[in-house]
Image (cartoon, rainbow, N blue to C red; front, side, top):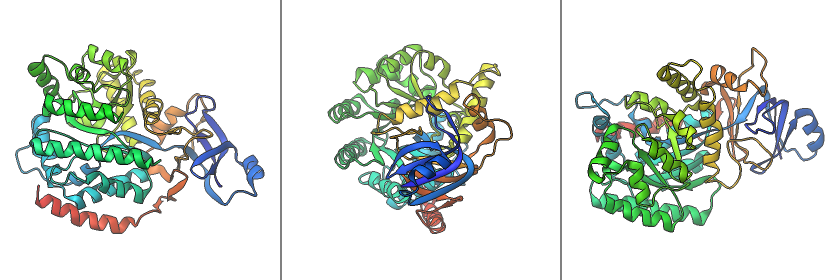
Length: 444
């Protein structure tokens, strides 16, 4: 057994939101008990094999990122060869669709490793990744799995199917998803899960989506797809099919409780009703939406209509604490209401990301409770004002950033301690990744 503590524990369990002077007993990969640190020492003293001292730091569940592109790490510092893009489609054409074509298997592996390491350092313990590498498709999800297993985080992986590079590439992407989903079901790993990746409605034909629908329903899985991120996606679907993106997906049998739709900036009210009816998941990515100048999703309306809205970063950052701050400011600014987003942002980040993750994993995640996975972080934050079950969110919002995370644990394994990643050689990986990125850039 391991004992973690002492510290102030924010559990995100409504039955016991905050535990002061607390500790957690970890047995194998699960939380056995949460309580007073000194009492836990007395109760389990003969059974505790490892004490992980947190020196009165803040202990909380590891963060979940429900929409991420790990490979986007290799875009940092890279120059776009054409004129600067003036709209979202040009961003895709001049940056992302060129970068993903430049990736080989080594690039897939090292870009994933970099982003995962940064995630660990920022307190992210579960990532839903959406991958694309049109010139390295078959086996690409295995390369990302290698990075996941080496670092010890949790991840739900998918490959982005699109018709933009031709039918042969689309078919190869379908087969990669199908193969990997079957593999995950057979192995039943507690760390790695799968979804069926799709790019967006405007790059997918009905023929391709019909084939995908058959696989998704046979394998009882869900799609991970960008939906109505830019206006062009919604306009394309309406002009070609006389259906919104969500109406089209529903007609093709692709809306279900495991569907992960990213963005939803330009959804219509009826789209929200469809998502709610199917208990589908819609992921808000505030920094990405602002950076791409596509607008912002009406998450207040979505939540009012019963849509399960989660929170991701879309590759813009690995720091979910940063994204919380941006989401809070974005919706205050756009609504013209300084009281907006106080309830909605913590709901999508903590409560709803927890609900979404628990659709894919067997035991409770993103919450600290007995019987749940031992995925937690310790943050170097000493409150300057009282912290209680009534006010812990403002402490997170205004006082915590990813850089303050000092210990990260996933599945009972310490991945980072005292700010140092323990599971891989960080310096060696960064060195090799820089060399790999240089070669990827040459092919850009």
